Amino acid sequence: MRKLLVVALAVGMSAAWFGAARAAGVPDDAKGFAGMIEGKVVAKGEKGVVVSVTKVLRTWRHNEAKRAESLVGKEVEVRVGPKARENVKKFVALLKVGDTESFDVRNREGDGLEFLELTEVQRKRVEEAE
Image (spheres, rainbow, N blue to C red):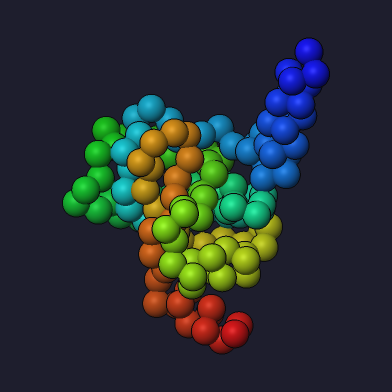
């Protein structure tokens, strides 16, 4: 019972802390998505942000989503992956709830997206903040 309580608390705290309780996740038709999205940051955590997707700007050649547009209108986690470049981590640290941005992302597995690269404007923003 004690173990179950600890697990429940850990899951609940991480979901609330990250904002994942808000995120609907990547729809089945968008699994394997790779491309650029635009959206508003609705929550922020240590490992990324939750974005309300307003547009799919483009898809990349390695996109495997059946219907990328199914992301529009959804709130999805956009995480900083373990191999993310330092400038991506710094950019995420600069984001605030309410910011509207474009994001270069992919869905490898699970219900979230992962940052890939920054745009030129985003790279300059990071440089100016240093």
